Image 1: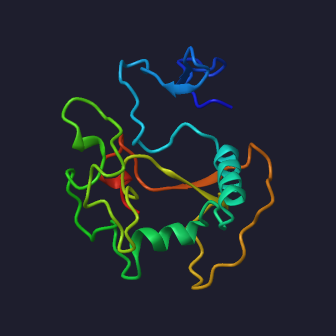
Image 2 (image 1 turned 180 degrees about the horizontal axis):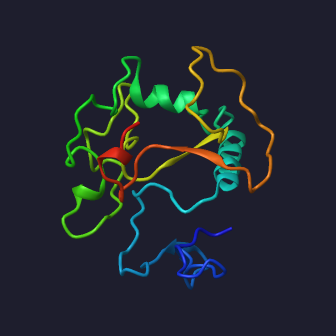
Length: 180
């Protein structure tokens, strides 16, 4: 699977986000809007199964226990323990995270270090804006559980059609869409 940009038609695949150079290696390409993707942008346009496969590969390669976070783990990493609305507190300013109002011309992704205020109490960057994050959990209607304990992750692959949890804001969202 190669990440692809969206298509105007649901039955068509969009253009690939990466190209292959004459040396055979993949490289970032110019997208349909004429933007050259940057290597310090967050990873995007990957399916949940691809994110899980990458975490599994990274765990095997580094011999460290990498995986996607469970929803409540993501929530704690973003908010800390004081129930704040945003990683930095309870007030939103468009200059503090990568959101719709952060860009005068049009929505645009940014480097993961571009918005220094978009940092959680634990030092995790980009949780309120830029791109959303996959979580390990399957989607269930309603709010996330409020138990203070997180059980073992559900590692069964499920079906590709199973809806999955995504958290965080994104570069095209206004204030209601950029909270934790």
